[in-house]
Length: 371
Image (cartoon, rainbow, N blue to C red; front, top):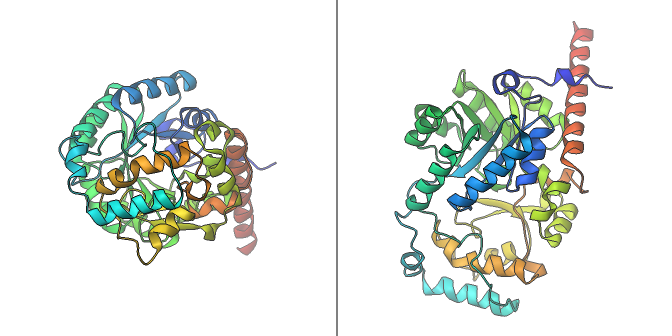
């Protein structure tokens, strides 16, 4: 049996966690299960109203007790000032409207009965300010910035005793994040699911580690096994940040459309694609009829965020609501090829820890024999 005590880094003592494994999910039960299994659960709350954030963070706290967990918000610069759908709608080109109408007709998609996840509200300064206040008022231990790390937000979070973290996809982003005052960096490689950058994980991480100095770095993008965890530590990082792994956890299935679960199980690492058709920013997801439609020669270039959100948000909601199988899709990283069954979070975590410990132990033995 591997010695799980080998899987340690300074962040474990600093954050009072058992293993340096951070798990991101949009589901309350999954986040709590990650924390309770010895990792650090992080709740993705970007598309939640402020009152929902308050309730859901309180629900996680009730499930984990005093154990630490975090919340992630996407705070991109350049968003509209107000939560006004009408103002965004007025600027959407007719060519894009006609293309979406053609998709609706081709796949016979009925109207959504309520706004989609991306059109519940407009990504705007008005909404962001209310979301930030909801997080600051909560007992959450970590405030993670998924896109953007406004200095005033970082300062306010630290003043409330919250650890701060920023996800970055390029070495050029390091000085800005450090200047903002964040305490942890996540080096997110090209392999990663959802919003991701252009540089591969193995190329990115050592550069981020070197540029970060004393600031701890976590590795995201393509992390699926204990071998990947051990490799992250070997590159100088102090832990890993994982998202795709938990999509096929038992706890997450209440949050997943059954068709998405099947597509994720069937998908290999080569079955994901980066597209801007989801939100207007680069977004890795499983390749389906949705991504293929936007890759067609007659497809218009996706609009910038939040215009693309408004263009497709209701349609994306209708696709899942009415079970339009060819268009149903999920964000996922290239690590999806390692996951082919639904399992409890605790089982996934145990496998990661045991394998990483075994690899670290084997490498130590190899070094001794080589001396």
